[in-house]
Amino acid sequence: GENGSNRTNVTTKQRAPSSWVWQYFDKVPTNEPDRYNVTCKVCRDVKNMKKPKNYKWQKNDGTGTMSRHLRSEHGLGLEGEEGSSGGGQAQLHGYASDIPGIGMPFVYNRDRMITEFGKFIIADELPFSFSESPNYEYFNRVALQPQYRRVSRNTLKRHTQEAYYAYRSYLMEMFRTYDGRVSLNSDTWTSTYGEPFVCVVVHWIDDDWLL
Picture (cartoon, rainbow, N blue to C red):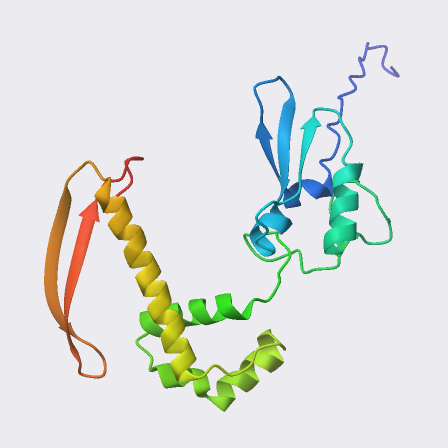
C-alpha cells in the first residue's frame, strides 16, 4: 500500500439471485438430497385445478421449464425479457403480482366475492339489502373492480347460508374426532337493530396446541 502496510483484498462470493418463478411455485423436499417436487400455485390456488402442473426439480437446475409454463398457461413473464428467469426486482406483466401479503396473480371470481361479501355483511351487522345499493356498485366499479356487478339480497343471503352450513359441517366433523375438552359459554345480546340473540362460544386447544 501507499504507507507500506500489507493489505489483503477479500472477495466475498455473492449469492445468485433467486428466480422470479419461485413466487408462483411451491417447493417440497423429497427423500433424495437436493431434489424437490414443485407445484404451480397459480394452477392450484387461482384456477382451482384438480391436477395443478408439477415438476421434479433438483438444486442447480434451471427454471426455464417453469417460466415457460407461467408464460404460456398464465400469461406471466418478465417485462422486456421473454422467457427470462432472472431474479431481483423484475417487473412482471400479465397479472397484478403485487397484492400485499400474497404475491399471487389476482383473478376475479364472482362466487368467491359474494361469499366474502356475506362475511363482511355479517361481521358488520349490515342488512342484506346493502348489496343492492347502486352507490356501492358504482364505488366498486370505478375504484376497485370494473367487473363488479350488483348482488341481489336473495343471492347474498343464499351464499351466506351455504358458507354457514359448510363451516358447520366442518366443525361437526372436527369435533367428532377431537380428543380433548372444550369450554362452553353462553350469553344473550342485542344487535344494533334491536334483535335479541343467544350466543354460544366454545374454546378449545387443538392438536397443534393453538387456542
